[in-house]
Length: 302
Image (tube, rainbow, N blue to C red; front, side, top):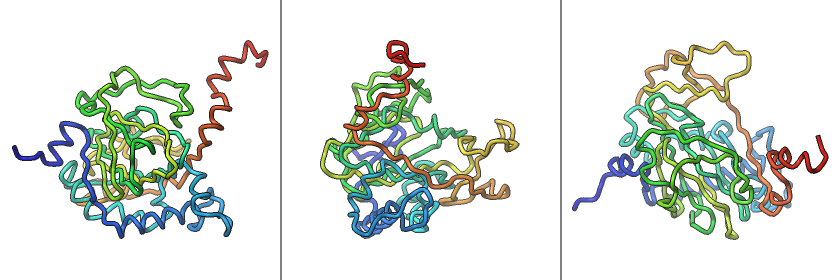
């Protein structure tokens, strides 16, 4: 029986792994550039420059995730259009593809993962074409908190409700999707340079890093360029927005093909921002805001 194409696997499972897609030389260059970002060498105001005597590991250990690093790095902006990525994306959602977000997940030892969620909740698309490209900078293993997915969970097009959780030693983000059976979950272990592409409706997450190594990954979010992007998260307060049916977030990068909405122009609304995280031992010692609220009456606080 002939093996399935990436598109067939993606449509059926909601994700597809392409082993060794990015060449080692590029991974090495990306690793160096991402370290420069964390050391404060690219002039990002929110990142304090590292001291000369601080090791790369010490500096990297300050961050869980850096959002929109392509805004500060031309190398990361150019990687959006890496031919190997584009070749797969054109099969999955192309031929016209745009990118709206980049994320650099550092995930040092003893740092938490991300609870079950669907990317489409945060980044809504009009045609369900949202696709993440998760590039492994380091080997991703079960021990260091590799991605976990629930195959086929994208098929119904249902967005599962979210609720707060109390597992702050396991997950960084305070909400988790609920209402499904996760017994069929699959860990997605990757070699450095391999890429997993996954659907915006796919339920996915990761557990904490219980190893002594980093689990770094660079992720880009793409979608079909012919779809409007009604993403309001970064719209400035007080701005006169278009009607919901017409809203189209224009802080995007055309990855390949053509942009039928190019006549609207492009904007620079988002900036690099950080998601620092305390280590698990520190997190356990600090009650969540929800626990504070629940415990306030018996502690005699307001």
